[in-house]
Length: 318
Image (cartoon, rainbow, N blue to C red; front, side):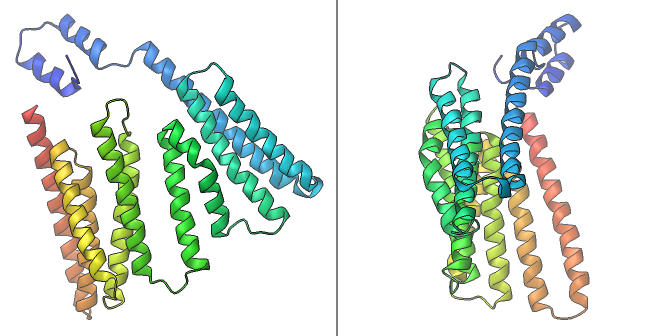
């Protein structure tokens, strides 16, 4: 049996003559987590927890002892830690997943090194070039490791770099243009991850990673459209609307194709926010609050009803 689910076992038990012992064996072999599975999960969980606490402890160590350390000790200790963790990844005979977790911790330490340098020489630890340098110097690790959490950190750094650049350098860029660029950038990353996952069997992006990137893209699109509506549809607004229609349609199509209700829930929720903003914009009176409230209640009810209908349909098809 391949990709059997708990619901399938329940259907088999109701419409077949398999006894209780046979059903129990199917559940044990295909549904329940084995001892080896729990051992693997706990091992990765505690390694991740250990690396996370270690990196946090290093950062708090520098914060607490900042005045008592000279600049060479601050930079030297951080560089030594990066070299040590990277050496473990390169030369230690440990599993690939453990190496990727340690490499993720090392990537965070690179940011700590730039922050220490920025504080010592007053180059700014919250400037866009700080995050740009951090992004560039871990780019090779991200590509080589092909580790979803590290890719997520990488995308977060790219978004942060661009946002800070627009706030500190390109201050004349409109908010709609900024949201449009961030929307397209995250959408491009999402589409690339989906295409690679479907075309290569040995590379598969986790569902949680795709969902987080999707939320970022949809969030920026929604934010940009809401700002455009309130700012009387400025210059870049038609471009954002066009790409939003195209990519939202692709999201709905992909959700129906893969029989996954995530986009069928998130995209309508974004549309509800957009339509509510339009109603508030065009109905400038006390009754608008009542109308928008009724619209939100009815639309959310409709979305939930559609999700339940599709889920029931997909289960029956299985």
